[in-house]
Length: 368
Ligand SMILES: [Zn+2]
Image (cartoon, rainbow, N blue to C red; front, top):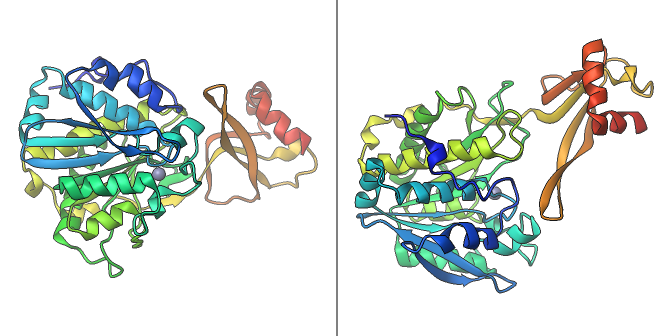
């Protein structure tokens, strides 16, 4: 049975800039049936919210926007909850088998300032051991109280990642983090891998060859690793780039399907349908992408030697509550084996015209 995602998408919150105020106004504030608690306060005193729903035995704890400028999974979580509150039969299966504890925005200060770090300039995903920050303490306290059976650690990744050594962007990536330096496969790690295999099967028809996985170097300062260490299967979700989707509205939909599939696999106790070994067939991410690749720029600026190309990445800058994407030249050279989400070849007349229509890019190359 096909599921019509757009029915459940909260269309009032779109784009990259998502704040607590928006969630309050357009999401949990207008869903009176939701149970919402404060689990702590941020450095600047903003509340850290936790939404609870479901009455099932399996306890699933998920948190999003631990990094303030990573909002795609937050948008997907909003849509997921709207779906779960609907009369879809699948939502009943999940709510009868699971109790969901959702922290939609762990770092509301960073969300407001559109920064990765919190207001003390600390990366909360490197604070799992020392727990120096109020946001880290709130998450750890919830984890201890809930004693979840599963954890979902929800993030965004940058546009530079490819799914393996290929010209395919890593639109969604996963990791079952290691639980010690030996990276041995514990029962918790294996269950997390089975969940990822289930999700991958769901996503492949939607985004063929655009699912990646991260390497499992162990770091117990990272929250996912520290929770996995306790034996709670933990899955890292990373929302990434889909073709021409810098607002990450398509990726939002893929994350929605990923979350739904994970919860259904847990609800149906369908782990045995998915082989741990298949996890290792998912390609490991590599850093092969620029946002824009300009080939043979010598045609528009003779400063550049022949056969040298320009790699450009966008810097995300917040201006008046919206994010603008400012191009920056990050590498000039042969750039072998590297790709652009968009590529312009200045030696081709047709692409010259396209390039001059992309004024920002053209001026950037010209003024160097
Ligand atoms: Zn992150």
